[in-house]
Image (cartoon, rainbow, N blue to C red; front, side, top):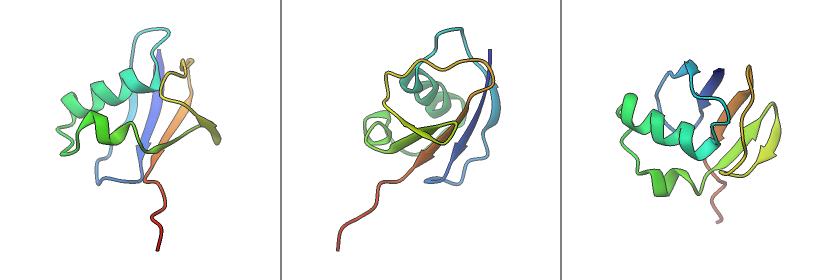
Length: 78
């Protein structure tokens, strides 16, 4: 299935990727870290915010064909 992935926390143009049916956000992140040489650990990325079709989602959320996944750095206090 195809999923559109956008990172707002790293300068990596991922875009449309093909993943297996039932893939989770965590699985997509793992794939992106390996395939796109993202210089951030998977553990750190799992603490970021995820939006699927503009709705908040958890790392174990199962994606569907055509979903838009946006990864956002959490706001920092100050």
